[in-house]
Amino acid sequence: MSPRVAVITGAASGIGRAIAQRCAGQGMTVVLADINAARLADAESFIGRAGGDLYSRVTDVSCADSVEALAQDVFARYGQVNLLCNNAGVLQTGVCWEEPAPSWRRAMDINFMGVLHGVSSFVPRMLEQAQPAHIVNTGSLGALLAAPLMGPYTVSKMAVRGLTETLHYELRSIGASVGVSLLCPGPIETSMAASAAGREHPSPTARALMTELMSEDIVPMSPEDCAEIVLEAVAEGRFWIFTHPEFKRYYLALADELVAERNPQYRTAW
Image 1 (cartoon, rainbow, N blue to C red):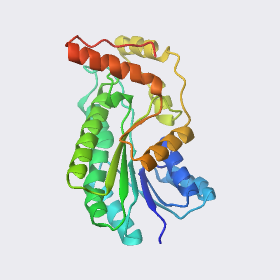
Image 2 (image 1 turned 90 degrees about the vertical axis):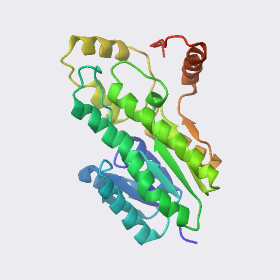
Image 3 (image 1 turned 180 degrees about the vertical axis):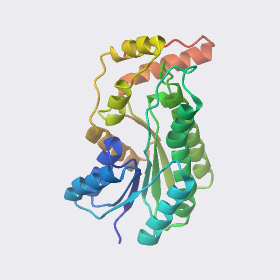
Image 4 (image 1 turned 135 degrees about the horizontal axis):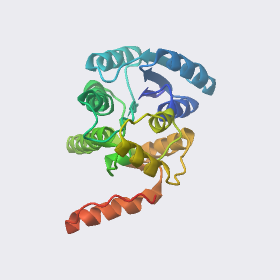
């Protein structure tokens, strides 16, 4: 029997790289996809030490043709995909009324359309293959909770949640052997968070809000620990994947506000 095949976008760094490394360590054939060719080559060299067959391809998830070419290539080479992680993303921050349209478009094109392109290109092929499969779409705390300064990011990640839940219902309705999970990580030690924290905000309003948010005592998780949680959830067939259970009290508070029709209240004391 041929090894199981995992395809991971945003695989050159952070959560994607950690998931790829863990899959390789389990003996899976791992396909690394990322827009950054140099970091992709570095990730392939590093992950190669974990064992397993590796293949990398430069891919722009915001481009439907690029993702379709990835899917065609992978299925031509291996004939199957058992795990698809639509993980590539960017953290676009700023005050809603100050962010220009290109910033919103970039967040949507990568964070949401990147996931949709993966679904559109891979799911039809997964439904036709003989082996079962699973899809993990990377959302965020922002897929469930809105926060100041996170407009473009939150909007795109809430769209990922809507797509992923809908996909789950649709696949279940046809009895497909393709499972779906939504990864909603809390703070993770990645370059994405570092780049957002270091971004220059010309607006005094934005600077004040960022100062408030960055003052919170948040303990980030390593990408490797996150990857372990992800693969355990996939093995158990769980839809929701949370890295920080302590955030569940905020989900409950939001649900209470919704049912009671109270105005939402942003809670900074994480």
